[in-house]
Structure formats: structure tokens, C-alpha cells
Amino acid sequence: MAEAAEAVDAPGIVIAVSHRGRRTVHCGGSAAPPAVPRDEQRYEIGSASKTFTGLLLAELVGAGRLSYDDVAAHHLSPGRAPYPTPRNPATLRHLITHTAGLPALPADFYPQALRRWSTDPYGGYPAERVVAAYLRHRPRHRPGTRWHYSNFGASVLGHTLAAATATPWEELIARHVLAPLALTGIRLHPEDPEDRKDPEDPGRDGPEPRAPGTAGPGTDATGHRPNGLTPVPGLVMGGFQPAGAVRATPGDLLTYLEAHLDPAGTPLESALHVVRRPLLRRGAGHRHTHTLTWFQHPSPQGPLYFHAGATTGQQAFIGFRPATRTAVAAVATRRIRLRDTFVATAYALLSEDPG
Image 1 (cartoon, rainbow, N blue to C red):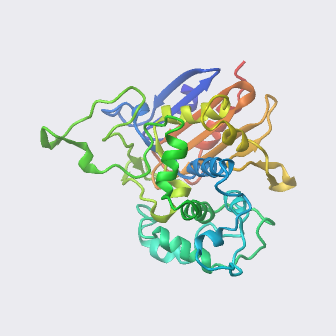
Image 2 (cartoon, one colour):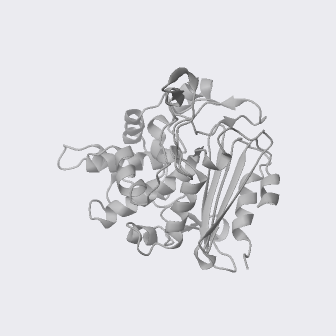
Image 3 (cartoon, rainbow, N blue to C red):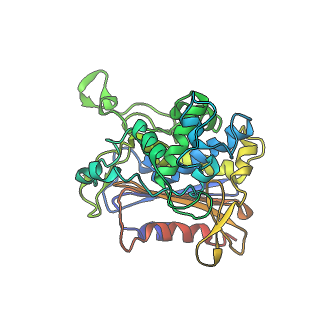
């Protein structure tokens, strides 16, 4: 783990491993150790948040509240019976598996985001605009025929779940995923700087007492630009929350992954089994398998499941391998786009034979 951390050039990095119920955490990075220990800070996990939205979908379907074959546009355009023929007949299954025929982001997203691309690209694009863009979009390909990774689609799914249940996405995630799995440190927004104030002295920042392994106010990790020196403000996801809003401590990420390793007896047992089932194959020779929420690769010790994510200033990798009862959660406070070793390093750690 120490060698893996040293292989990544970032101001701060945490690698957390759970193997057969035993946790090991290693912290490192080029910056001086912060006042709040790195492994107690909350990190942006970017696109790995999609696994939470997919698990929410599996739980709601398992409870009989929705069907994977529901057409998203029907839930997003209620009150018109019989339903009109939607521009995009994609189902909930298509949206979560990136087969809905959607681009990565709506076409009108880029003009408003370019001027703040490195700091706040999503904040000016609210949920209502995401839904409107989806309802007027005409897919280039019939849903279910091609795979194309899409933040747009995962976000539409979250808003569809909210519309179908008349419950905000944040409340759905908190009630059906975070609370049942006791994920106490997870937040869906950047912390408010006012939360850091010492109530006895508003002019001075002060830490708030917290239980080990949990995150309280003042513990959001600070991301950095590719130079590793310039700090980046916390990312506001706007209408793309379901695709990338989760902020979590390494401890909470391990708790989340451990539930996937051994679903038996957890409140989400059925849904956790569902999200491990292969659904489609893609890529050259159809060698890459996709479940409802995870990328799945073969290995000599059994299949491994993983998802990576990146924001404007941070990166994350989460994965698990049931056959060896191993899970890896890695986070770093630097966004690197070219010749990036972070994901490959974390993946290699998960792929190792633990003996």
C-alpha cells in the first residue's frame, strides 16, 4: 500500500483496504500532513457516485415501486394519458447501463460551462434543465444497441426516480441507501464554510468533536489542479448530482464496499446481489462486462468489480473482489488527465493475490 501511494503524485492520497474483515489504511502525499488526518476527511468520488444511484434503483425496483423497463420519459412527463410517444424511449435500465443513446452531456451544457470549466462546470445547470434537455433530445441510436458513457443518462435516471416517487433524489439516497448501510460521513454538497466556525469565537475556525472514522463540519478535503499546488473549490454538481455528488470518508467507502462483499444480513441484501449480476458486454471482442452499476473484469481469483471517478480537483477508485473478500478505496487530491497512474495503481492493488 505504501508503494502504491508513492506511485501517485498528489498532495494527498489515502488508500484503504479491507481484506477478510480486517481494515488497513495508508495515508501519503506530497503536501504536509493536514490538521485533520487525511483518512478522516471527506473526498469527492465523482462518477463512482453512480454506483449509489444504481443501488438505489435496484432497491426501489426490488420494493415494487418501479420497473427496470419503465420508460423514463413517462415519469418525467406525467399527467398526459395516454402517454405520448417520447423522443427517447429509453428505460431505467438503459439509463444506468449507459445504453440510452445519450451523449456524455447535453449539447447546451458546454457553452455555459466552458468559462468555468476548471472550477464550477456543473453549478449553472440545474435539474430542471437536465430534464428539459432529455425530453427534447433525439437519440442517434436506438436505446439498448450501443454503449456510451453518459453523465447525462445517470443524472436523468436520478431525476426520474425522484419524479416517480415524488421524493427528491437526495432524500431517496439518504433514506434507502445511506441510512440502511450506516454511511454516516457521506454528504452530497460541499460543506458550507460557515460550518467551520467555532461557536465560541465566530472569527476563528474550530474543529467539531466527531467519532473516529466519521466526518464532521470542516473535514472536506481540498482538491488541486494538475500542478498539485493550486487549490480548487468544492464541486457543486447542479442537476448532475445523481452522476457525481457523493463525498465520503475512506472509512465510509470501505463500509459501502464491505456490504457488497457480504450482503447477507444487510438491509439491502437483495439489491446488493442484483448489482453484481452481469448485464451486458462491450468493447473490443465484448470482453468488458457491465453490471447494473459496476465494471466487472475477470481475474484468476474470481471477478472484480470497480468504478473510478474524478472531479475538478480530486480522484477516486472503489472496487471489490468477493472471492478474496477484498475491497479497495483510494482517493487523491489532484486531478490528472494525461499519463495518470492513480486508477491503474489502485486497480493493480485490487488485482493482487492477497494470499
